[in-house]
Amino acid sequence: MPPKLIRITTIPLSLEKLLEGQLTFMNEHFEVTAIAAEKERLEKYGHDNGVDTFHLEMTREITPGQDLKALFKLYQYFRKNKPEIVHTHTPKAGIVGMMAAKMAGVPVRLHTVAGMPLMETTGIKRKILEQVERLTYSLATKVYPNSEGLKKIILDHNFSGPEKLKVLGEGSSNGIDTKYFNPEYFTAEQKQKIRQSLEIPADDLVFIFVGRLVKDKGINELVQSFKRLSAENENISLLLVGPFEQELDPITDENFEEIKTHPKIFTTGYQVDVRPYFAAADVLVFPSYREGFPNVVMQAGAMGLPSIVTDINGCNEIIRDEENGLIFPVKDEQALLLAMKKLATNVQLRKKLAANSRAVITQKYERNIFWNLLLEEYKLRMKEAGL
Image 1: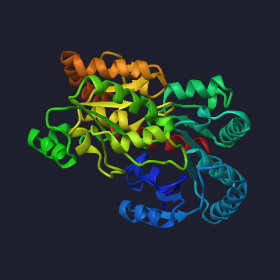
Image 2 (image 1 turned 180 degrees about the horizontal axis):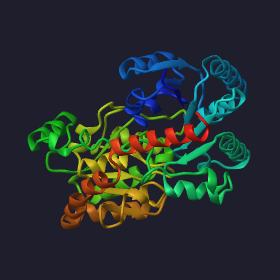
Image 3 (image 1 turned 45 degrees about the horizontal axis):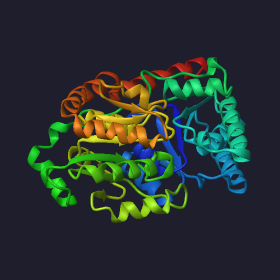
Image 4 (image 1 turned 180 degrees about the vertical axis):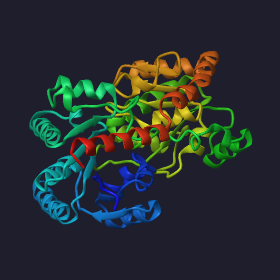
């Protein structure tokens, strides 16, 4: 019998997007089970990816009562199934999963850190989240920050010692499939058809954002910068690909209304396949406040787009300023406006950055290389545990 590997994320969307294809690959070497909330969506994920699933109701908020229930249910599941490895991803899955695994005596307990919501919180909530982070890392046998910048944050905040931390390869949680994210799949004619279907003017320069349309992703700054730039340059459009989360992390009412009414801002909602939208665009703008190692920036690069990103960990590791994109200070609306203006007006620079974009991704972040690195890591940790 192959060893048992359990992967846990808070919601199935993380399995679908952040770990796309990874569990199917690992299923060739382990008996893999995916655990998350949202039963129907999780079961569909399991069916589509050929892996077992176990439903565990979890929330993305601080909910002690529900969290204890989830902890006890998971502990019982581990006691019964005796997995060799439990590997968690996302904060709530991390604390519940690592605690249950430790209590049940799971020998290899791994946690990936792919971003820290606590970085944008204050007061008592911040203190609680910091303690949760420390506890999660202390219960794990190994912790994987998915960028060097995130590793530095963990060390600076004394969440864990350096001996427990490891960044795999060049960073990321999953690498990127550069055969799938390939601009060659889209002809100039197809690109125009995609624009036509969205009612974007054929000759406009299109800035694109892909992700949740929330405050923490810098959407307020993006909308205001675009509004100001479009007032002086009528040949630009902004394409927003992703869902609003007004109940969790709302943008301002003013910007919400601007997105709905501005004639040059286009929205698509959540999309399973984002490649056509990258193909129809010219520049990624990603003004996020905090990230682990953003897939979107890798995807845009693989599709041959230059990126404008904030100077935060992950983003400033994928993008080299003036080589494959531009970097600006986080939450700085004026700096974002100037960066967008620079690429809207300087065609030569934009072409240079675009020409370099794909090569950086294919050289450093190819998905199969990352999966094999992680597989070797699993084998190493099992060997250390005497398995």
